[in-house]
Image (cartoon, rainbow, N blue to C red; front, top):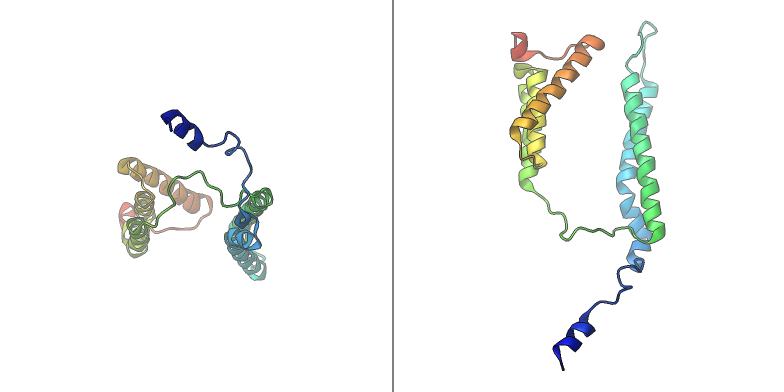
Length: 188
């Protein structure tokens, strides 16, 4: 048996990659339900927000935007994202490509990332009054960015300071809601 005949016989057929996925597990009802778990959880959360918003007692003296404005925006965005996700899942399911990925390696769980995110949130919640919103939210942003694998800590810190400052200005000046000023405000 020659070397040429071995390599020719082990070569994949040219039509192997172009055929649609014939894996029956990608078309099963179980696969569809597993793919719809997160959209269903998000829809339940959005419904919870909607019900809470509708039963909220708002005095007549409240001006626009009022306490229902931002929850309404968040609820609407969540419902739109749920609809887009459901449409995407159903399209993939009907074409038989649900669960097909191009990734060579499966995703793995990272305890280090989880510790960065949870630790950042705990530091934020414990130090908020002392540090204030701007520094506390910047610290939270930096920790979450590290948890997600950011390799540029200075850039993450600058972005965190910028975003938290904009949020502080929006809440304090535009909405009239006071956030803790902490060290930068001269008080604790």
